[in-house]
Image 1: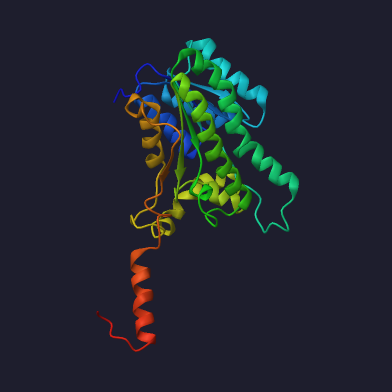
Image 2: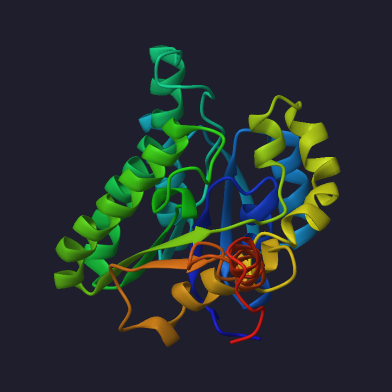
Length: 281
């Protein structure tokens, strides 16, 4: 406890899932948190539950005026900004490249990439003046590998987030400001179900049904949880990571590291059998 004592943080997309849990962990570790999101009732309820060190500001991260106001609230009220977790995101349009509507792709890019860009744009001057700060951008394993998202546009947006983060890290590092990404793997949240068409509230409510399915997708034999992301965010927000910048930290239980061991061995066994080779040796 107390790893973020005295720090002022902003968490976007804080009304559910990874953002909500990270906001809770930040406050548990002593931070004062500004929670941002579009769903006002959920955001206000979360802020009330977290107590006097939490405040909700309704924000659409695709709108620059909203993001400017969000950062302004933190600085006007608390005099500084120590960490920005650009977590807000949403599904992208599904289908092959030949069917994707341009307007849907642009909307997805505006949130998943543009929201990160705007957050960094308006937080950077504050942190540069302070000569301190940590920006954390939520990316995805889909940024590194094709086929790990239901949407190629979402995957492309997250790849852009990772590269922009590296570029901004090189600029802001000269001012002692750090920029890193977290790339989650199969984490139990509602985002996949939303992408497949479930209403947002229902998707969040039934996301736990994904747990068993996700448990088999990586060598560590369990589904990823929002705690896995929140713990990494606490590390990157705090002083323990003071020499870490420009990194895309993958939190996926080994999902994209390579082929799973047991299926690979079974494939080799079947290949040997097909060619009449002994099973051992």
